[in-house]
Length: 236
Image (cartoon, rainbow, N blue to C red; front, side, top):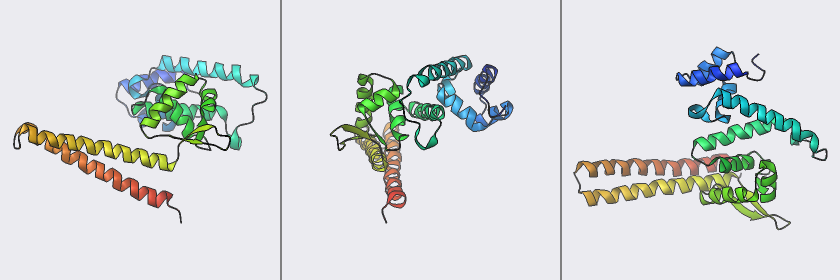
């Protein structure tokens, strides 16, 4: 049924469809499933190049077993905020994290970032992240260090003097600015090569094209980020 859990046979069909170069929409049509179901399934289990139906089936069974084992053991745990389905939220976090993995972040770092973005406060302490992700404090510390280096999170102190890691609109803006600066730097280095290799040579022409391209891209990033910040997040 379209609304039920994917079967092992369906997961094998997804594997075959990906191997055959089919789009998610076409795979979903053949399974009589929503495209979003197939997309989430693939992104949660290795992405389009790493998805395997047998491993996805095993991972799903493991998650189901873990939920059944851990949920009754915490009678004092408050109910999910806003009446949310805890299992659905965790599945979505896994899907969201997989997008970051596909963009190049290590898996633990991606999970940490997804956890922060999907929290209502947009922030967590190290202890909260450790408990939420069920990992060691060292793993969280390493992930946060990488996210800070990329400008994706910032630190601040709350009213209890605890250090919190924060994501918000301004953090995303600053991250885009850092990306633009990095892109522009590539253009500067490429243009230096034009003088070293000699203007008019094939190699110099190639580097000049690189410089012009990345300069245009970096300027576009800055312009678009400034406009988006003003229009979407500006205060009246």
